[in-house]
Amino acid sequence: MAVTSTRPAQHRPPAGPAASGRRGRPARRDSDGAAGYVFLSPWLLGFLAITAIPMMMSLYLSFTNYDVLSDWSSMEWIGFDNYRQMFTEDPSFWHAVRVTLTFALVATPLKLAAALGVALLLNRPFRGAGVFRGLFYLPSLLGGSVALAIVWVNMFNRDGAFNSFLGWFGIEGKAWVNDPDYALGTLILLAVWQFGAPMVIFLAGLKQVPVELYEAASVDGAGPVRKFFNITLPILSPVIFFNLVLETINGFQGFTSAFVLSNGTGGPVDSTLMYTLHLYIKGFTEYQMGYASAMAWVFLLTIGLLTVIIFRTGKFWVHYSDGDD
Image (cartoon, rainbow, N blue to C red; front, side, top):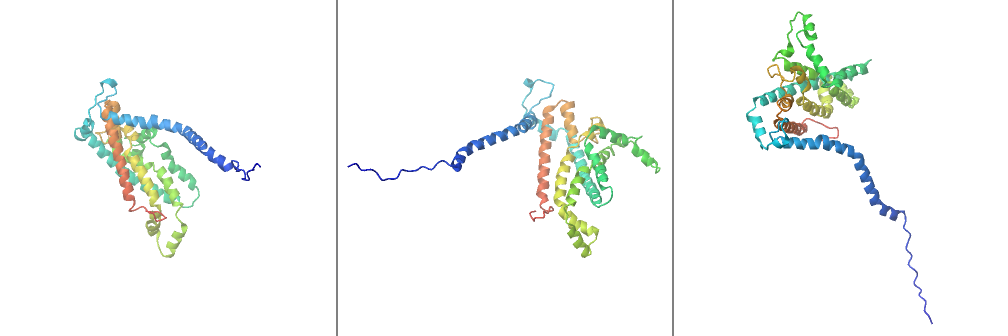
């Protein structure tokens, strides 16, 4: 007699949505990654073509005697000769460093102080506050434009508007932009006048200060000065830190106004020979592109070092509301 098996047939569950999702997930992740790279490709191409590749070429040129006018085949590898010449044989290099340090260390604090002072005034509610904010921000919109520098030079000429203003008080003016003792001062004054950008950032920070703190301080008998140093400055310290980093970098990068005032020479008597202007003269006037590339890399490393120092010192005076200083 035939014996039939009583074992139940094994039933395989149908592939559900979870199983099909697991099988399709790697393909979907790959497609998402490809789409991301497609959307990033314009930025990546621009970064490579405009920033990364030129920087690497500049680093290579800094170790050569490339002079722009010669063919690439005549370019010679000279090692650290450009850097040695820069630090030991070029007196204009150290003069440009002193001029740039003077400009940055004077203009940056004055600019931040002016921006914070105007921001405190404009933070008060009064009629037409928006109009005044726009007027104070207007010089920053022009930025480092050549037209603004030309107007500024004409204002401080012997027959300029500034001397006409001094004439109303019986004060005899001079050609400020042609005097080595005052030419750099006019550039510092121009930089301080363009305080609109940090002013707007300070205004945004002041809006975040809780009014209850001022009210509590008033109850305790604190005056405006005490409120400013004990409430406003500590809470505003992250914003001050942010503006300090940006304006320090901008101060060391000053070029347009010095170029226009001196007609690209750094005069009078090299009093406005900023580092960037000296770099421009070496690279595009004297055609020493290898030397100029070495100057550019020293400049980049110096600004990076200054930024690191500011970040290191920030932990001693920057206070955050969450206690993470």
